[in-house]
Image (cartoon, rainbow, N blue to C red; front, side, top):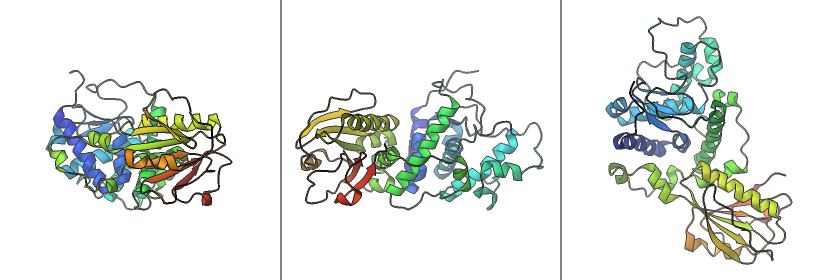
Length: 375
């Protein structure tokens, strides 16, 4: 058996090009693809997933038409995001794989991408959960022993690079968070509900209610709408989506350190922002502490030491808003109780007010979106 495959520049170009194309179709699906670790493997027929990573045969990928490759990648990413590998349990593997494929192919079709010509479609069944489809297929012939086992893998292929040892339960939780973030990004794109809506498969997963961190992600993760001026010649030059994101995403974070905001609230916000940065490393964030003045800038990255707060006086939001022209962020995130002097005119930059318990009522904020920290 050969050793682990290393992604070639050509393989990376194929995957990055697919991400860019899907980004142009759907913010929801594009966000899921950004979460996916896609690695080459010649031991999969075309593609497969073990629930954590997606494995793609590089020779097959290079032979496919662009839209067919996009549909293949989205098919596997949806299997991973919906935890189809982990949820099988003791059920018969081939029937479970067929059930999951039926659902995922319906989702890929909803994204406007092709599904394999031989793929089974059923307008009623593909709206159900995979457990319900599995039950409905009871009694169908399983095929002979030489039938392909499908694309839901029990573990990584032998030529895949080593994984980080992350438990499958942790991978499932991270994909569940990715689904929540994808919904937030789609909403931010102004296109209404996510393309899967109230799909039974998502209801079966019972995703956690979006908390303020998921809302924060919505502002940090840029969408296809935001790339209206994107020069698509970059794709032909081999510049990848990751590099474009690295150039394009920025957040200005202001933390109210006036006497009315306690230190615990300050530490909570900055710590959670670091968590978002760790999950989405292409974001660049700049922190200011503020009372009647702005203290900074402090460049933030995941895991970096949080600088000690400065301030302690009154509250005036205007000094931070005066910095917008200099920083040109994609979003301003301001932690405050809301009691202070607001700018007379709303800025063009999206503003997210994160308000601790006891803060100003929503209607007291003249612009922006208000999100409240729980007790």
